Image 1 (cartoon, one colour):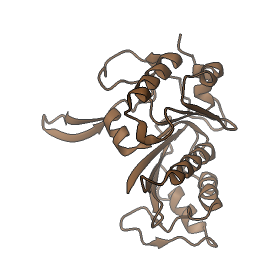
Image 2 (cartoon, helix red, strand yellow; image 1 turned 90 degrees about the vertical axis):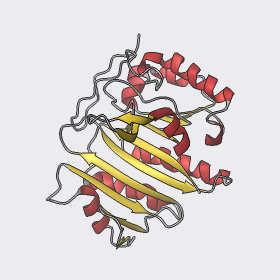
Image 3 (cartoon, one colour; image 1 turned 45 degrees about the vertical axis):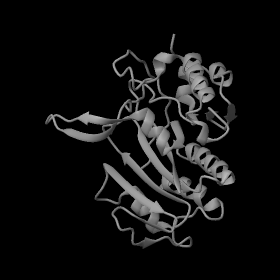
Image 4 (tube, one colour; image 1 turned 180 degrees about the vertical axis):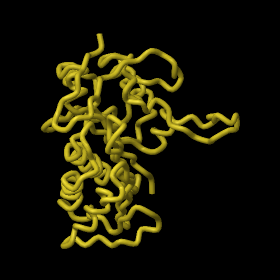
Length: 265
């Protein structure tokens, strides 16, 4: 089993019943994607009942005693594990995290995960997201020998994750919502030198290769560089140049609004 990692970031609140219902609708729409267990702490002891979804929705939204942040975990025995993390104040973006555990030789399952990921991105009103093998994410985003304030090694740490400064990079599947469409320009997204481009209702998906297995192939690496250059290289974080100047859209955390944007020159 290998892990496909999905990140979805949105400028709209996720910690409410409406968001929970939208995500749940995606997961229960197809056979085999409904949660098996869920909860805010391990081990997960709450069994999901498709005929009584209120408990899941209440756990998602945190209840009356958890209004600022929540981390809800849920899993299906064979197909995926997931977590949603959100903050109701103080941050510009909420994040939705999924881990799809799949057989590497099952190409149909990879395609299905991509489709579900795209549906989740739109259900969460996503502005940015990516889907890739855990190995690709780790290689491009994690510093193994990071040293903490104490001066002692702290293990792996993600870099380039501040969306106020830049995007973290280019991965196998890259999702963009309206804010980034305005930031880059729709023409640039539609003409990007990706292996494949997909258009949703309010989203764009750029793939760098036919399958996520090809993420480190020479042709894919060249295509990633071409995508960065095409969209504006200064919009992306590079692990080997962590202090380079970058730019990003300006997010304003207000319900039913659009962010102010200024595209890359």
